[in-house]
Each structure stands twice: as structure tokens, then as C-alpha cells.
Length: 310
Image 1 (cartoon, one colour):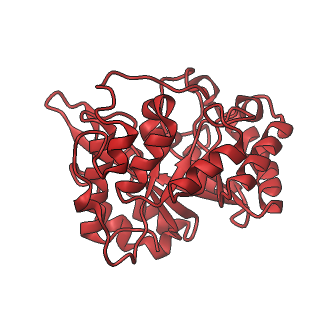
Image 2: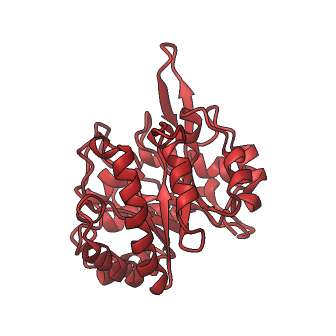
């Protein structure tokens, strides 16, 4: 997950793009919200499952929650990664209500992001406990720490966060789940000891308690090779975030659907057992096309490569 520093909160973030083109009735009829047919997304063999981070569709979820979930299912996804828990609800729905909507759309949520300032920056474990209760209701398997605001990215903070994560991970494990940490590019800045914060988090957290969700876009952005980290910390990377990276004429790095850029997905998936991979989630922080078009194009590419979740 990525948002403007200091402004990622549990509200639904709007961004400029066209409105839904079809209604829920159109979805039921088998037509995508972006006007694209969904037939090519069918998976006759049914051997692989595919996941998408709902953050990609955050604007649509705020407008038509049920309809968007139906679209995700019809696009070929059966697994979603949640976000936007505000301490009590998801999009104004109590966890039980939201779980019912997922069930209606034949979706499960193996993972969820919990961006909780009270826990992350104030050390309130009670805030994490409330999230654990929600995660149990949603039948999550992983609870993810998704993002650190820029003003907190200091050696002192990361050191204290390791202890905080360890404590939260024990609560998470006691509830039958596992805590994970999601990376961006800034974890590859170096602390006073010359080691990156990513190295610090991996080396100082208990593998029995803490996994990692590797974002392959941000790894590429930071000029990191995922396979090097798999070799050094085997089994720690239970989840991937899947989005591609293109480089504009002016050198600016941009987001793209899976398969449209330079991210070396082939090497990462070839070493998925070494990584410890269990789930991959398509995610787009922003899209040049509509999010609906983006997740459709991404799943078509993943199916072509047979890079799904078992």
C-alpha cells in the first residue's frame, strides 16, 4: 500500500478517473464495470486461485460496496486482501456485516492491512487487540502492518517498532493468525549501523511470529533483487504484492498492470518455495486505466503464466 505521507488514514481516498460505467445489475449480467467482458477471465481448470488487494478499488468500494465485490468475483478473483478497518467497521459495516458481503460474492480474505496509528505510533496494544477481534471474524490468516509515515522513519522508531511488532505478533498468533510486514522502498534506507531497515526488521523479529509481504514493485523501485532476500531469509515471505513498473521518458517510475513493465516476476515465482509464498495479491496504488481494467489485465497475465495461489 502507498499513499501521500502523513495522509494515509482509514478513510476512502478519491482519485481522478471516470465513474462506474455499469451498475450492479450489469455486473450480474456478466459485464464488467469498465465495460469489458469478463469471459476471458474464466478459469475452467480451477486449479489456481487469484487474489487482489481491495485498496486498488478503494474509490469504487466507497460508492458501491456490494457491487464492487461482485465485480471482483466475476473478474476471476476468489481471494481479497482487506484494508480500511477504522477500529470498529469496514466502510461503515461491522465485521460480521462485511463478512456476509464477502460470502455473498464468494470471496475469502486471507489477509488484511491494518493501518492503526494508535498502535503503530502510540504503542497502544489495545488498538491491535480490537483489530485481532475483527480479523478473527473476517477469517484472516495474516494481519499486515502496511505503512510507516515519513516523520517516523528514524533508527529510534524502527528499533522500538521491532519490540512493538513482536508483542502484537504474540497476540496475533494466540488468535490463530500471523503478523506480517509490508515493504515499500524506504525500508532500504540505511541506519547508523550501515544496515537497511528491511534487514533490521527481518533479522530482529522472530520467524515463528512475523512474516513479510514483499511488494515486488517497490523492491524493483529500490533496485533490490527479491531472490537475494529469499536466499538470505528463506520462508519469511508468505505473500507478494503484484504490480508492475514502467519508466517514463523523463525517468519517472510509474505503476502498471502485471506484465506491462520491468518487474522480474518470473524469477520471483520460480523461487516461490524458497520465499515461503502462500498468497499473491494484485495491487495498484494508481492506474492510468481504470482499476477494473487494471485488475482484469493483471489476472489474465497471471493465468497465462499459471502464477496463482494453490
